[in-house]
Length: 88
Ligand SMILES: [Zn+2]
Image 1 (cartoon, helix red, strand yellow):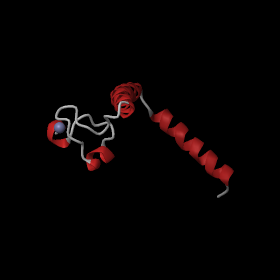
Image 2: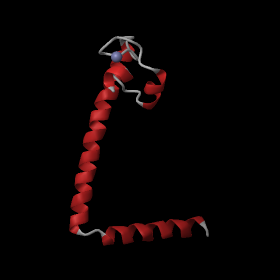
Image 3: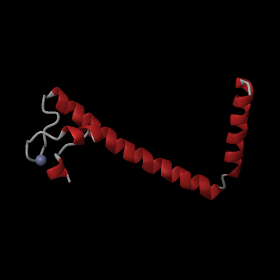
Image 4: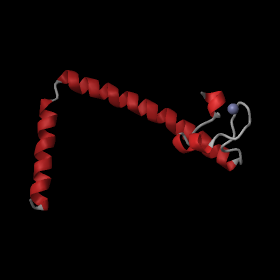
């Protein structure tokens, strides 16, 4: 299959998917998208806070007990504000 055939196959699939969306489905995906955006905003705020702590030289320290947050936790949740003991 050439690149242009693959591209038109993808377009066809998309149109079918959109055509199948009922009004309920589209309302549901709108609210899911809204929830997702809200979660993303919360995460973004945490990341911006973490960046501020980097500037202040306090990044990686638990806000509750002041102990260094484990590197494992920071690897998974770089925006962590608390160590695993304080933050759970
Ligand atoms: Zn702590």
